[in-house]
Amino acid sequence: MHHRTFISHLECSRSGERLPAGQVANLSPQGAPLLVRYDLDGARRELDKGTIHAGVGSMWRYAPLLPLSDPDNLVTLGEGLTPLIRANRLARRVGMRTLLVKDDGANPTGTFKARGMACAVSMAKELGARELAAPSAGNAGGALAAYAARAGLRAHVFMPRDVPRANIVECQVMGAQVTLVDGLISDCGRIVAQRATEEGWFEVSTLKEPYRIEGKKTMGLEIAEQLGWRLPDAIVYPTGGGVGMIGMWKAFEELGALGWIGEKRPKMIAVQASGCAPIVRAWKDGSAVSRYWNRAATLASGLRVPKAIGDFLVLQAVRESGGAAVAVTDGEILAAGRKLAEAEGIFVAPEGAAGVAAVEQLVRERFLGCDEEVLIYNTGTGLKYLDTWDAPSVPDGGGP
Ligand SMILES: *Cc1c(COP(=O)(O)O)cnc(C)c1O
Image (cartoon, rainbow, N blue to C red; front, side, top):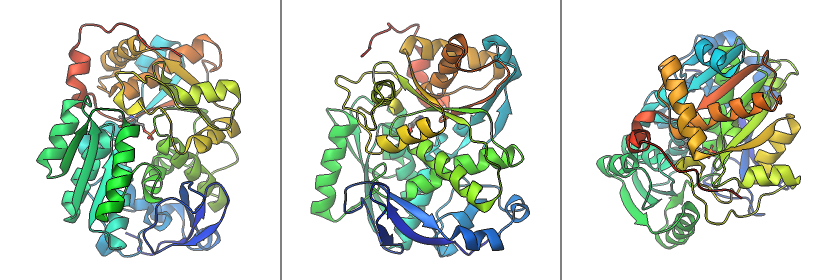
């Protein structure tokens, strides 16, 4: 592993104000997410793609573009460098020439939340935090529990009572302190914020610390590397808090600054469930931020985020890229997931299945041409959702 990181400072995503790196940080003084900035000129002089390519077989091959200073603080279970699969049979079924599936179900803990938490927990360890806390719609909690255990730190996870059972059990078995809340992830978030202040816990809540974005940035770095340092025409991403979307967009910006990729950027397509689609509504309304979605309901628990703190960053990426935001119903999600599984042998989380349903919709509406190279990002394995996939059928509820 290349040991030197090119981190230079933290930056407020709203005002651009700079803060020093090397200390624990949550939101900026303006209350907005912080972004990690690097000395990309220095990195451009010293790094080359070949060295990265010869690196370790995990997301830590990109360590120079990640924030960790001392490799002794690395907390890893081998996350990242997941398969990029050419899905020809599925492509034919939806009327496309090329479909790619990036399968992050292959990560430790079975979801891409491992990327963000590996980075956040490594940094928490490096910066001296001892007890970590987060609200979770399920998978962030599992990943926090795993990496905290691996680091020898304590984890406190607050989850809605109705998250998939796998998420509760994995947290408990890995030794996290689990609190089930009668409410939504936003209610859990309020409780964590308050308890963290009282107890001196470090909050690793979505976008409330800067390093989960950096871990998820490796999604974009990997897509570029696995395609031979070029990008597809479109990336379809199931969007809850939007960290993955923000992370990938940041990755492309940094790769552009390094001169490792050309000018072309994919259309970034945010997929949400029709029972909770605040980003889609904001995109259609042309607003810069989303409004709280009342009575959020979908079986895709990772998408049940009624108001994301980084909504303006997601909407920015969608707009700058010429992308779109689309909603699909729970019924469409289930049908699409079965189609993908039967066609390709890839058993995905409902969130990943939403991406397949979105492609079908966008091909029908001719937003996507059948010759375009489209990448569907699968964020988790179907094995964590046996109850969902086992159900005979689901009534199509929800709507704006
Ligand atoms: C958390 C989660 C999402 C949403 O991720 P964001 O990056 O916060 O939008 C999607 N799918 C799964 C399986 C998740 O666990």
